[in-house]
Image (cartoon, rainbow, N blue to C red; front, top):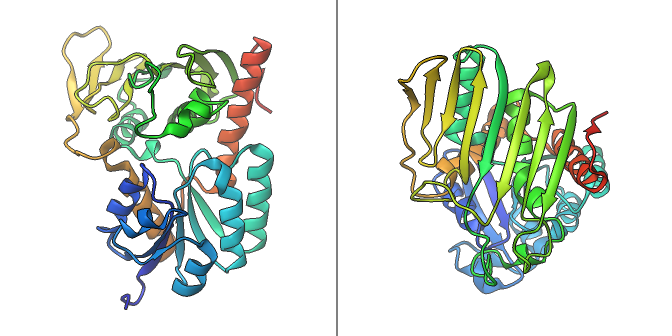
Length: 341
């Protein structure tokens, strides 16, 4: 029996990335995982939780307070609609959220009508290095920010077997680099610098076995004249013992200094005109994914449910990320800068 006030969590999906969700729920104060559902029930059973292969049956039997949807976008809408029909009022849904903007808008409207709240599991903004960079920017540590660059270099996209051992559906995604990966930085750039007012994209395919684009440049015009560049190539790597920790390196350059994110998760500040650097965040010691950002996001949601604290990345707010993504693809097709309305 759950303690009073404890959030009962049911999980849908038991694929590769779900291990980080389940691991987080198992050590989450104020929450208890109560069940797992997967179409291959043996994977649900492997979580050690009561296992189901039918979502509706799990929801009607377990009556969770929160459903954690850990599935690819093609399955999001049906899962959310089933949960709404079963009276679930709180959901976390993995990104990319839904198949496209129209579907995401429809789902948001249906959730709002049912009095339900969905938080998109966009966890990169919860990585400790971006929280440290946000604090430094707000404190004026580098003066007036003028430009930012992130170079995506996970080094996992080479050869005919790219992604087959971990997330094989990556090879079949017709929209890949932006829809699956760069959205992390679309959202993170929003968090750090505000919504862009325009985007320009040059996308390409490097590995021929990948259906979608896997390399490219995206230029963002942010408020106040700030420019940000996402430079992505999944076939190339960066200096790191774990290429999936930060997935690359970043620079935030201002009138009084530069913040640098390295592949070990450390953040350094070099004052303008100087050579010495100050470590404002030491190297990451978390052995799991992304500085334990999955746990940080899920803890954020539990606090929102239990304490009523404001939530980041509600599905309604996340629609802006999808709108920006659509503009990026439109820019690449038109070979022109697209202004955001």
